[in-house]
Image (cartoon, rainbow, N blue to C red; front, side, top):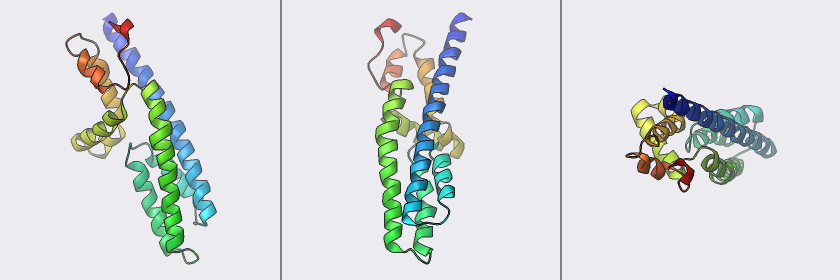
Length: 172
């Protein structure tokens, strides 16, 4: 039906916006991580930047997972040590606080329409239900649920609770 096509079209556009935003933020995160670990003197900065880029697609915890091997390498790399490991960890924390808590939520909230809290809760829920794949797909799956809930008057209130802003009055 025409309504089903409209729902699918909205879902497709929202997922596309999510992927574009997430890829852009992940690229910036990976670039900044590579530059930072290069300044610190860690071996293989491009590897750490690429790993940060890839794991940034897992909301909330991917960037933490990406930092662990780099910090461990800083600890065991002969010319580095505890100070460099602390600097490496600090760089990861700084980059991820800036991009993960300031830049990304602003764009995600505006473009995807999910609140930051819901993104985190969806990560936990879909990770529990589907494991690591659920963590990667948590935002698209939650957007699907939100769009489905927005289609009927009886469930629209739940969709509004999942959102990042006030409801659009033209949608009524």
